[in-house]
Length: 353
Image (cartoon, rainbow, N blue to C red):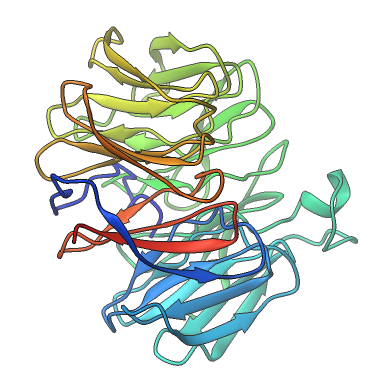
């Protein structure tokens, strides 16, 4: 799923290549890809595009199956333990698909907005573009005009009302608490039964997905240019100010270092106490959420059309130029292959020759 697991720490168990990888193949989709790819147990690469389709590719880049939705797809496919694929669309539906064939199993309409497709406040309020995130018990959490908890059967477990659109993937703590950001400037903590526990108000929209550290600290970015650290009780521990919107989701290293990109073009490494460890500059805004590999190296994209690998001390390992903005968050396979989407309509596979 997005950020690999319900805590959204962004940690990969695999190692990034030491040498600059080459493009092994790319798949053209005819529209930008901001969704992050996912790997299935069937050795398929799952992706989604603004061409309104969800698709599966084999490891050679050939299409295994695809399914058309009614609008653009920003959502990252999530795969349940038994192989069911869940993905949301801007047509206001959460889809459940057979992971092997792409066959539709069910779909759940999020909200009851009169306009389900297109652009503008009324058309986007119920877009199912948050996550989805699969909890330990199989519950699927997504957003739209509210935060939704949906059973694997496709029925509603609960709905938590918010004051704005929920565009970021909810995170789920070990005790079942759900944390979600909203475009009403708030971060919400929701009990496992759907009751409100607390609300933290930022100064602008919260489109970053929360990440939960082992000690329960919640990290989340906001369009107010800040990364926030919150206690499990909703108290502000510290706020780190950047030079632009923080829409990327934080990655948490195994030593507790937090990595976050900003629209100011910098990737920041931040200590547990909220002070700067280092900052790495790219040529444009960063919306891509970073991945931390097994040895602490960091992988992320930038709107300067590049994919970057950075050492744990903040020095550049390598970068690869792709054909458009890299807002998609990259993933890493066990053999060192990197998969990522870009605004040039392509999903890329990169590997060291």
